[in-house]
Image (spheres, rainbow, N blue to C red):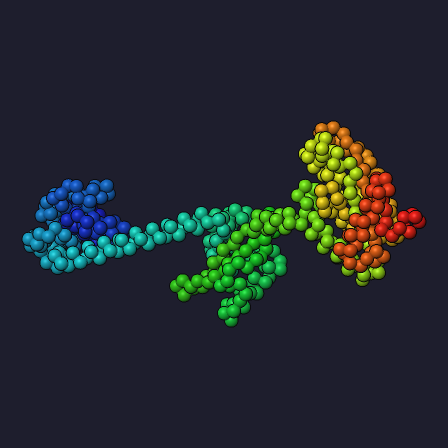
Length: 424
């Protein structure tokens, strides 16, 4: 063996089976050790294959390997061949204290093998953890006790809009708008001082996050503490609630609005009417309730089909919304029945004027894909507090007035109080 310059302590491995292979792997990763050679009579031994891959000299005869290494007197020999006679040759070349063999060698390689297995398991666990963090749908952010960010996974990059290189070493409060930013700093400072802090060690706390582009979004955060090597760290898991909140709002909207016209349905209408009456009581004002039933709608449905009927109802909803104020309410409460709540009307004439505008608006032809159609509308009017102070009763009074309008030739309006009809 040509003598070479070594960077670590010289080692010779005799026996390239499982033990020798494990020993070789360990030494290859250690800069303090240089493996001179490995020997085994089996050319297919795992240690032989590994040595060839790493350009380490291999021998088929362990004795030959010992003699080839005699230029390195400090060499330590690991005899894993079960041939104790080799120890004599090693003793002659290097001295008896330079060989590890027999039960001692077996124990050594078993320890090495076990350590290798533990290392592999740890590496596997670490890789699995890194894969989970990397592919997690939620942002995972690690910070130190000063608030500086130490880790920022891909989900955090996507949610907040920052690359991890932009935020590492920066304060985590850059991801929060006020007042959440100040509240967070004070909360963490109090926790570090007293061990008590809102949200730390809990999950599902709703906050507001701040993206790189300056936009805010609803978020849910779980914040936990961990201690490594005597140092405290915090791990925050942040979930973007934008889609969930939008879905909740959509469900809430659908529960209170008509699916066809997007107008408030009966449930929301009764709530609006109740609020209008409560406000009118406090301000000593009047509320007008108009009940509209379309004239000629059934004919459109029968002749042109339900699809055209639906489009007609949508057109009616648009025209009604153009008539009333933003503070008023237009709702669909039945097939072709609509109700309007007019807040704080100055006089009965104001309610009559809106009814006239409704009738005029409905008299204009509706352009549908199936052709043009004309309809009318009969409007009944009830007034708070004159006709009733109870929402359900007021609605009933307006309904009765609407039937009165239909009995009087349709396409007109009537108040529930008959004297108002005569006066107006």
